Image (cartoon, rainbow over all chains, first blue to last red; front, top):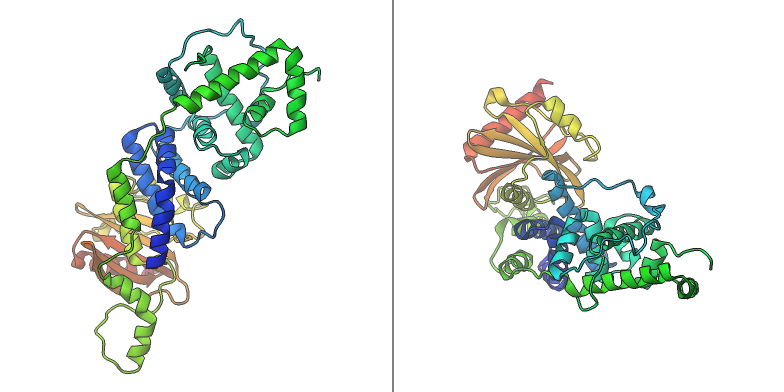
Length: 174
Length: 249
């Protein structure tokens, strides 16, 4: 099915407003500028094709879902996907055995923070980006990642606890 | 609350996802429990650091222009599109006896248009992701589609006719599963898109779009569209080779 000119115009307006969010997400998932450009083009191309079928709802979540799926296909093709622990393992994760005393304390710079986030498994990284940068609710993140809200919660918890372990003492001023 | 707040609870609190009473219970507990208090503060600092310090990447200008460019309404006359859009009225006009030299079937194309497929092909080439399964064995390629498309495409090896099979990928175009089979002809790729023929599928048509020769036809109850940068003659040979194998069955 082809888009009418009116649909194209609508699509152009719609995508223009969410392009940076889409690029940012792609950039964080694939962690490379050039790959992100490829992913974004590919995703937008798919979005144009699917736009006629899109019937309202959360437009940004719809676009970001296409972007992240494209990004993961990209990583999978390049065998860059990290294996995630089974989700149920995460939900029951008891992180209570570390105390502030045993945490390795160091100062973290913005650069270190970015690097540590880039080292996270892609799905954790994605959850962090959607939550902290796109300020999405758990429900919205669940819709984008196509997982239950509980999984989003455990991904965020896991991601943050990894970061916390690695960058124990973030300065207030950071 | 005697129990420590779980990490999940703490994050939900910091993310404003906790209902008021649970939040109060957590805070009440934290006021008496140094460990939980320190966790909450620590994660709050981490969250703050992330949202303040993470670079928010913005789309490079060239990329933005390119993407918005292909979403813009076309200014110039796009003949294949015009033909597709006006195909039905045109065929009515033809029935009325008006002589119009249009080669393409006037019937409405239900699925992806050939132009869309050409774009898909170009895109697959550009991204270097032409194949998700690389094999010249039709017994590898055909079963690969199980669970990937909502039909089983017909896959034939045309190596003896000069078109060896290279592999395939599954596409989802315009809300439909499409099988994309990749063949070669010398240094050229020939991509064959297939999906189940439906009422009103387009009949045979041949045309050039953005330098790619395309031919659409029905074979083995499949709507087929072959796209290649090889010559018109080669794509026609390919079509005939394909059709001859389906007739043998």
